Length: 99
Image 1 (tube, rainbow, N blue to C red):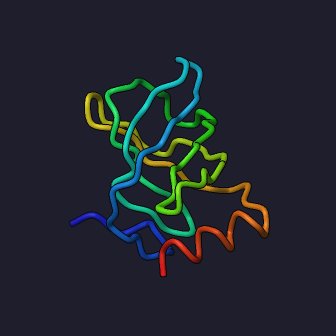
Image 2: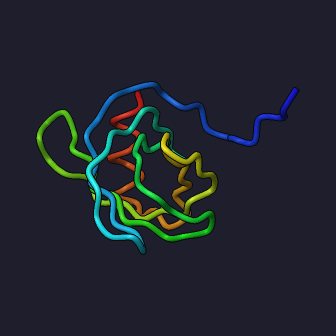
């Protein structure tokens, strides 16, 4: 059995996201989200440790721009991201989204 490394509960959802990494910009979906990170469902390629920019399309239609670090990658499925660089405003926007 694997040990859970996440300290924040992830909320399942389905939001469009545009992500930008070393391989370019891709359209994708966010499968789950927490204050600490998310999973990006995409066929795009990333490397663990890579910094990516995320533009999450909120239900209100507004974009939420975040920066994150790739923690896991599954070819053809997607990647996990942590948010180590959140500003107070970004954290508040995430809090509103996950509650």
